[in-house]
Length: 265
Ligand SMILES: [Zn+2]
Image (cartoon, rainbow, N blue to C red):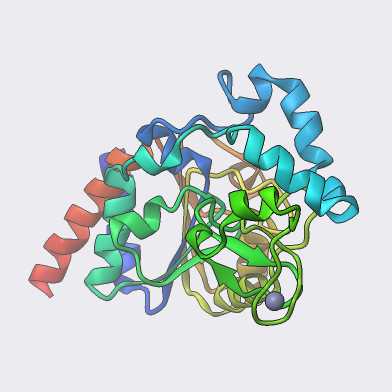
């Protein structure tokens, strides 16, 4: 593993435009359960998964009912506001700070990259702490709407102050299109990068899964996986190599080596 960490640090130093893709695996070390692992949210509660699959459909058919239900039941991720970033999030924020990492594209809605200080962040599946207008994609802080008052006055769903569109949570539901701004920018970055660091995700959920494949087809790009187990990316040769283990530990050690190399340069 030591060799691979050094190899990754060198590849990163040699890159001109590095980006990172992250998924649930980078946040499990912060205590957030993943979805399909042994103690995953869906594994433990298949009914919740079936409901989640219908969530966007239900929202479109009955946004008022969707909001009422949201007000009466806690989210399945529990209280995310108390969760803290782990060394993996901080390592990526460091890589950005020293000018190497240009963007982080995450599937996570937990806002931990933001909390760790990453500036150039694309939240592919949205952010659990934000709301979004489904018509014009404007995003809002939940505090900008008094949904309890709106519920009392029978005025749900909240409406966008900019365009009058219906407001929903920013977190992208099953069946919901990825917001166009984030989808387009992520695609552009996948086309542009010469190094892609894939952390804590097997990238099997489309269209996110398209990003490493788009980069691979271009050739002339180094794709490094940091994952607990080999993934379809490893098996199909989309990644050049995998460093297997805990993302927090591995990313921290890569950043240490990058800093050493940078010191020598
Ligand atoms: Zn709007």
